[in-house]
Amino acid sequence: MGTVVHPASGLRKATLTDQELLETSWDHCRIHALAVTDDEGPPEGLTPEEFQEQDDLDPTAPSALRLHLDIDYIVGRGDPEPMRDVEYWVAPATLIFDNVWDLVGNLHSVCLPLELTNLRQEPDGRVEERCWRLEGRDMDLRFQASRYTLHLRRPPRYGRRVLRMAERGGISFDPHPFA
Image (tube, rainbow, N blue to C red):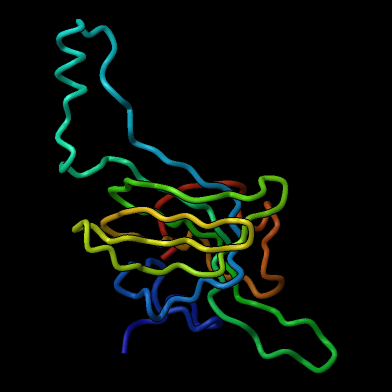
């Protein structure tokens, strides 16, 4: 039995990986921001010949792209008292997918908050990398990635399932867990 990093909520680990996918729930996790990073493109000041050489990249080489999501991760649900709203253990978290490519999908509305309902792997016999699907209210994204890591940046708070900006420390893609 492992150490519990947050006894009140029962949280055992502040960093979760794709190895725990089946034990991890994604329902109602609010997405505050998302970003794709680490693709700097070819260096500036190249001759046409050098640019052509840079443009001839090996399509089988791993991608340097990362997909970052800043979410309110729901660690657990409290037992509701009669005539009261359900309360949750929620922590601000950074979800990072490594070696991302072939990103396709829909963001149906950028006016309403995005919310995850499911994260799952889908079989794809064409490629060796894992095929992921992020589903949610007003969103559906599919992509290839080698793995993901979820970093809970602060200890979980008990209350509403969406944290206020002050409670979560604003928007952040910080990959450092609180414990």
